[in-house]
Image (cartoon, rainbow, N blue to C red; front, side, top):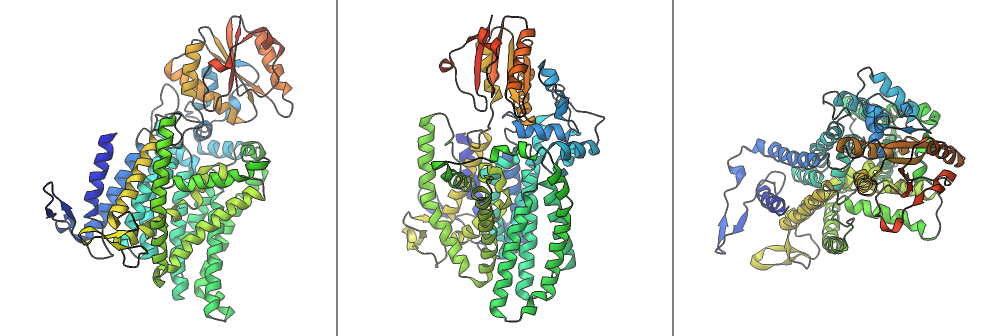
Length: 622
């Protein structure tokens, strides 16, 4: 690990000599030799044609980003949402898993077996009738996973996760384009791409077999169109037809990837209303809103609305919607009303920095928390001052307002859903993809000011050797950018090592516990309402199969709708049919205990460790 960070620091110093100090100029890098004598390095770009510099830098950010996203890709076990991606992308269904009876792991895992007879039509049909998401990503995953062999008869986890990892890496050059187009500065573009490459939140999205990295890519592309439209509104020139059509297509693909992409569209609508208001402040002619630039934008809005309208009947007719989204609903009491604020704050912080604060060891948590706190005490003033300087430039002010408008509008929508509609969107960090690219580009714009060590900095003072410093801590602008980037890199490593954005479920640890505790055959029973609970048991069955851990284990999915006693009856009937002795593991079992269970001896719960995602009770049935 030490070698990784030393290499990252050395690499970042070398990259400094390639990054533009402005849109068109480069400055030589000066370092100090071991003898403390200044030595001028011969800049790399002196040997590289100028037209190659930007492509090479983008290639470097892409290599760094895709390396981080593919690292340790299959080390973490899949969780319930990923199982739904695997099953539906294969054209399979959870309905084939028997309920209310003891089943072997192979039967439980049957939906994870590649199905040569399944078609794209099966993928779409199963998804729209049994899930709550549109089908675009799942169709792409269906085509992608066909390129990979199975693992032990099951779909390849690397295949499922490598697709979002590659798509997530594609967001890096897109972030460059958004930054460059918005601020007409390759420097802003490169800094945005560099931060996107190492963002722990970006790595988190890309390493899950889910559709959020693709949705974030569409968000970035849609924001590029918004920025271009803003320029045309400013100049009062019509938006090119091909840009308008491309914008509609991107928005349509975004909605077909995730319904929450519509939140991004709402934020763009708010920004466009703000731009219309600004124009009306400079001109009293209301007819200005029907000028050529606005007519094309209205056409884009109509096209996007029609594209979204296609999915409305499917969304409203989905009978599983309330059950599958139950986890983000619920009442609050007392301090629970403050939870969404802290959940949102944690997500914002983790977009830039995430050290191992989720570790189970206090000796790791405390130093990580202190380093994070010190980092943000130092970095936040730098970033805020950078945005303030950008706002002082008329050419950049409007773009800061546009991107900040997207972020602020999205956050406002999240809290409206949370506090007024009772749908706590802050509980799912992944939903923040709707404005994540705007955060990254704002970060790049702020760091660009820091990179220049502008005279307009508040708190700028003369440091040693005549080098301008920022704030009171005496860190040079370029060094500050390097430090922020390295913190992002360290945070990305934290994520890929499962020390940050940890998986909700740890079936690997649960199977190890069963191995150590149960010398006899086992029955693992859980209550079942939706395929989410099937996925919980699939995780356990998959670990058992891949590790060949237990002999003839059995699973019971005791279904319940409204009456929990139905699960109790199913457990009772199953226990009567099984020969003894065996160990009964009640896992996430939310129903009254069956009478047959009372004839078994309950193990001391305090002597057994807790396992994330699996609340259990152990009974020895002799």
